[in-house]
Image (cartoon, rainbow, N blue to C red):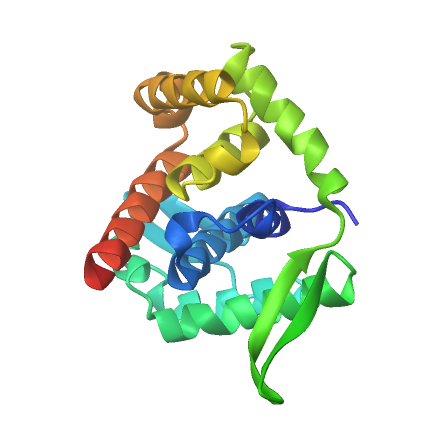
Length: 216
């Protein structure tokens, strides 16, 4: 199975060790936005004049279909309203996504036992090699300065805003170059000319900042 935005982001967050500001809630937000990008790729949603428009149809994917059911009430309304969808509802997507990735053998779950009582679950990445093609694309774009494609741009937005560059670029020099290059892209026409990426990038940053401030 080739990982999409959702699978890639979750696997990067868990491998080699958890980042995403050490918060499951932040990862739920990141997954939610990865779903929005995938729905846009499938022409299920679009943004016009800062308003969200949804197509009333099923995707055949349980996580994306659940996302559609959550955002459908926001169709025709400002994208800023969709941004504040509750973490409880985003958590429903997160649980479904982890189950699906476990079924597809991308993740494995291990019970954490304390004095013979189940205290929780530990989730591990089973196939980290599947991340290598995406990392290569990001290196070419962000480290070596090659012309980006839309797929790499979206992945870079999710990874940078989700604080995942340290997992993706363990080499400090590469990581610093990638961060600098990403900031240049944000100000350049590559992202600003694509209104969907631009608006979701700003919305994602606000949502993660609000979540972080609420727990600090």
